[in-house]
Image (tube, rainbow, N blue to C red; front, side, top):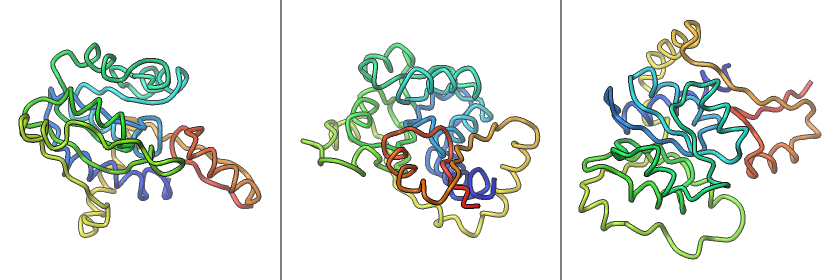
Length: 214
C-alpha cells in the first residue's frame, strides 16, 4: 500500500481530484484510464464526495470491475464504442469534472460534453507515451474552453508536499473503513520487469502494477 494508495498513485488521485477538479456533491465526474493505479482511486474518492462517476477503460472486464467492484455508476469501453456517443448517454446532464490520464481523442470527446464552468485536471497523457504521435491535437481547444469557461489545469503531486501527511491520514481512514478498495497488480520476478512495463503501456494492468523482486 505504501507504493500504491499511500504512495504517488493515491496522493496524485487525492490532490488532482480534490484540489484541481474541486468536485461538489451531485457533480458528474469522468475519469480516463479508470482501471489504472490513479483512476481506480479517483473514482472511489469522487463517490465518497457524493458524485456520479463514469470511468473510461479498455475492455469489458475492466468496465465490469469498475461498476461491480469499485462502485462506479457507469463505465465506457473505449475499445468497443465511440466515447463521445457513450458519454452523452451516460452523462445526459453533462460533465462537471474530468480527470484526464490519457489526453488525445478521449480528451477531445470529453471536452465536447463538459458543462459550463467545468474543471479538467490534467494528470497524464498515456495515449502519447508509446507509438506514433497523434495526427492532430484534441479539437475544441481553445474554442470550447472559452465558450464553456472551462478550467483546465495541470499539476504534479509534489506541488502539495506540505499537505501529504493530512492526505495520507484521510486515505488511511477511507481504506480502513472499506470506502476505498485497493487494486494492486503484482508480478513476481525482476526478470519480468520488461514484460511488466510493456504490458503497462498496453493497458494490461488493473490498479498499481508492481514487481516483487524476491
